[in-house]
Length: 226
Image (cartoon, rainbow, N blue to C red; front, side):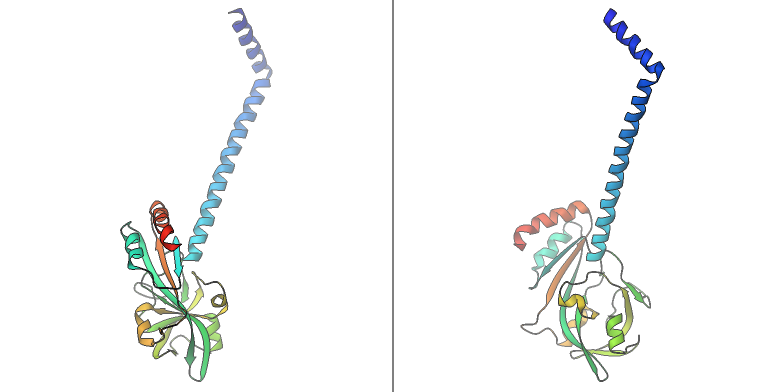
């Protein structure tokens, strides 16, 4: 008991002298700093993750040189995830007497799932590329001297330029990243006659939704994609 009383008296004396209060304050500040740094780092990770998905146009993007099995889309949809497909390939775009090699991307309704494409004028209705129209980036508009409302040719099809792309998402890597880009409704692609045997087509399946379900889908597809 004497030892306990002595310890208590020493603690009380040091507390009154301010030594323990300084130590306690330092401890509180240290814990607070760690919590602040942890919160900041978490917010940075969240911001980077959001930027990454916006650049991809989805939470998960699967790319192949061959058409995807319908099972892939079904696996995503049964998990409550949203799915959009696209097909990308190089082709000539014509306008009056001019032609230009461009990256053609045929997209389904709902594209993109993440991020936002900025186009002018802004589309009405559901906001996607309407049937019979295309969206063209600034480079092809400039090089072919196009204006919104002009007509362009893609294979056997004729399309109206409905908008100019100001800000893009889901861009390719390699040659396609340097080529001018044109977006067309996927439902119009067959009529162009551009899909021939041996065509160099990049198939994409884009998925978005609950993060847990996206990770589960990624794990389920891992063995199928290798």
